[in-house]
Length: 387
Length: 188
Image (cartoon, rainbow over all chains, first blue to last red; front, top):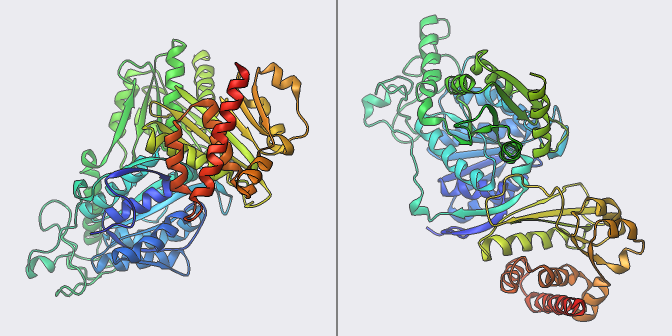
């Protein structure tokens, strides 16, 4: 297979471009979208590349239709993706719930910009964290990844497809205008060196009868593909193991939703990914994700230089969330700082995780600029003094 | 080694392209780390344009320029807006004809090494095309700072410019090298 971009070597490209190339290498062959700053470059790249790899890239009338189209594409067997930013992400919430309820593997990229509403189109923010996790209604779970570099945007896009296929779930790649537009070196591996995961298909007609049942005991049902010989009923209504609507039976509802939540929750260890920096002997911890984590690394170095034993936990996955790990850190340190480009979102999860065992302080920033390392240092020092 | 480069001018002067070429030379052809960012406004021509390249021999944490070690200004506006942000002892390249008003007090206070040349005019004389000014300036910048090798910047220029314009751009780049050499010699 020939790729319309260089593989097996490094390139100097934007985060958005890296996401598009990674999607193609992950096997994505259907993209539907609606242009929006700062995610448009993903669409531009997909429009250019897809016809050259026998894939489809289509502009829909809006974001509601874009996510609907990729859900349909997934059910006919394609790995499918859409990308957007805040205003479009809001429009996708209804069908994101549909994808969760129908256990459809899709990848949705949200290149965050400042909101609410159309806000600051060209500037970065981390204001969609809670929306990515809880934006669609009803009880549910899904997976949210947060890259901080262009290389991570590339790697995590491939991982997003693998997790979506493995757990038959939507995966959100939650990045921001800064990572999306910045250029860095990306090492693009040879395609044969990239590990790819494909969804479980029914082994036979008997298995295909239960597209929403836990027939393998792993909480993940095999997914029959439309047009491959099986009759399958797919609905957003509460359904039984065969997919038939059962909308007033509490037990069936409970069983279905519990399994959808548990297939993520019980596999937390496999899904969650994080890095630590100088955390082992830290007395003060910073918990950060995405672009801000890069400022936080520098802040840790600066704080250490001033004699404050700081350490960093950089989250690469913000949902599912490892509350227990945060509690362990809280037992070790006396304070946890959460710098975020919002007025406090992940902060609340960290606070819950810390469980009162350490002080948790928010370092908020909005308006489009990433925290400088100095700002984080200053905020930490100010609070450390007030103990 | 962490070096911060700030390039600013009008939209249309090739500020962004110059920054991308520099980042590409550093990463793809020198094996260094680099982050290129740009301020992204609705303007495409005539408005203010600003790009940054942070270059390092180790992974780059904070990706923005805080105190630029090197700066290239192509407009009076850029000069006025960003001069005081430069690091003490920074190297500064100026498009002399487009920056008639200089602040010698700040330049002196920051101990800047300033190279002010009529870059657009030299580009026009060299290639017949004033828009090769950004590539000429890159040549000058590399010759002065040696932040990447001449080979690396040459390869990155060839990757980035439109097909059919390779020779004309190389001509501009070499002229930049020559100007840089001359300036360094004069300092000795």
